[in-house]
Length: 373
Ligand code: UD1
Image (cartoon, rainbow, N blue to C red; front, side):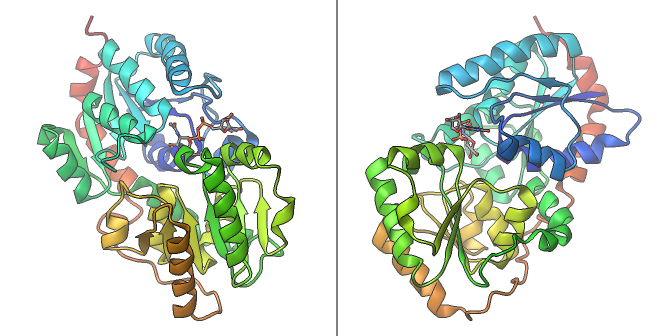
């Protein structure tokens, strides 16, 4: 069986890494890795390949940045000839980025089976580009690999046939479980003993410049109570430049470039709290038992609220500050790693389960896998 993986952006890399590993030594399986180049910087891409030990991609489509339509269309145009040349039996796509939906669409038109890793998540907010990508990718996929029961329920509710749904657990947690023992040695030198860790990159937050300016002021105020470390996504960096740079923030709010995986994991693990609008970080903090304030009105990962440490604080600056102060008041000031939280199937073996399902379906896949025309 020939499996082709499509990755494109930072949050894909930690999800694909364990699946590539789980299939690596199987003599019956050939693998092709395609990087769309949606994320292309050393700090957003190369360093993740290195730390997560992902093999060099066979193809880099170098699509780069652009509007949603441009980026999606470029992936589609560049991927089609690769698929025609390689003729995979199954294409695996990951998460909810533009590269994910673009690849799923090309495959479905070529009659190539698609497996969606991290299927079924729903914020029920169609203003988020990722929600559109999730909805369409799931409709087009033959194998829907879900991380938790809410994913299955969402898909069933949308009329997806239950035979396509496979609850395998959380592949991102596979990577975390494997690399957590290596993370402590990467704890960035000079980090204060207690701190809040912040990430913000969603267009709905950072493209709203007045809000971003006020959020920065709120973080500066909060940093008088607790030092704040803020590794900045390139999108956010551009917006901060629009606001005239970050020199005025003072030394208790530390703004820095995006961090590699291990350094960021080390910081998450020891953080007093994390303030974020990311999807994956809500899950990682839940697993690590670190309080997380999510600066969004909704989440596609409700299990991180019902079972984990996550709280939605919306885009309400007073609420964000009050929630952060309340965590600070409730916690011992020394920052020690927390106890991991147990969520079913978030155990380090999700990729093995995906591999087993693909092997069971290999005959079927290869018979059906080429062009439908
Ligand atoms: C994308 C995903 C989002 C994911 C996020 C994680 C979509 C719709 N969005 O958003 O789901 O949570 O990645 O990072 O697919 N840039 C660089 N260097 C890079 C990558 C990007 O400078 O390596 C710049 C781009 O030029 C662009 C901006 O960052 O100006 C945004 O990049 P883009 O790929 O459009 O989307 P993200 O905001 O990263």
